[in-house]
Length: 359
Image 1 (cartoon, helix red, strand yellow):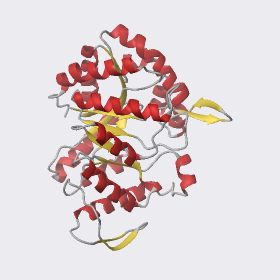
Image 2 (tube, rainbow, N blue to C red):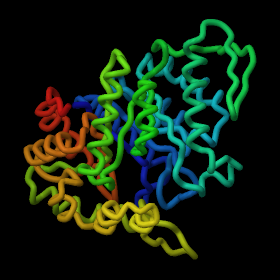
Image 3 (cartoon, rainbow, N blue to C red):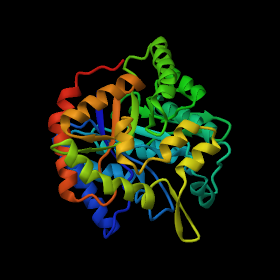
Image 4 (cartoon, rainbow, N blue to C red):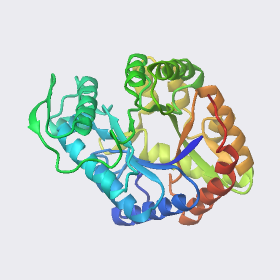
């Protein structure tokens, strides 16, 4: 299995943006030291009560300056907010800055609030993202000038100033749970994944088909299926639950999965899932502040190193997961709690699961 430090760069009480970034770089340096494979961060906009990372390139460049081994990437660029050439050029430069350690995440976007200020096309976001993927591949694979003619973008006789170190391009991720999109990603050799709100028994058949299609396509590397979850490790199960509980409550009532309406933050995760007809996901969303509920259903990995190792292994088998995206700094967690959790995870969980192959 592979393990990522994953950050929404959530807002934290009493911290400026500068202080929050400094805390993040310290986390990444510790993960770099303790055996994590990746570091990823989101791109979110216009919600100061939530995420403080609207600029993927800045995240990657600063992470490069504080790490030596971790593979770094956005997860990902919200593609319709950009001309794809901006993503192509930034990815090429970032791969050089990182010495060939870039993983490139692309997303179509799920929040309409991000699109309108940019005058971006929300309705066609998936098609735009798929076309951008083709542009990235064409630009990086072509020796000399390249041209591209698509539905949304056309380019003639362009020559990049910088090409990525990795050939033909850095590994690319597009997180998705849509069966048709997963079929497309498997054919294209694009890594993917999902979040703990989607029940694993519903998800596993989709990703099993994705893995089968990947193998049939003959790609030389293995497919990666990621899973985002909150993680907190302490010396005992009791200490872990005691320390993590208030931070779950804070994260899901004041930061994530809420929307500001008339100056008041209101839960929205369950409502959004119900609107999509995802009733099992809505049920999980209604309990995201209940640590015991999440632990009992193996949806959050909280406990001693031994307990967390067993829980991850079980979830990976059930859900066709081979890459865990660990959100390790949430709520109002202290530096001491963060460092202890990361260190215990890196020294006592990762070594236990490193050789484990869930599929």
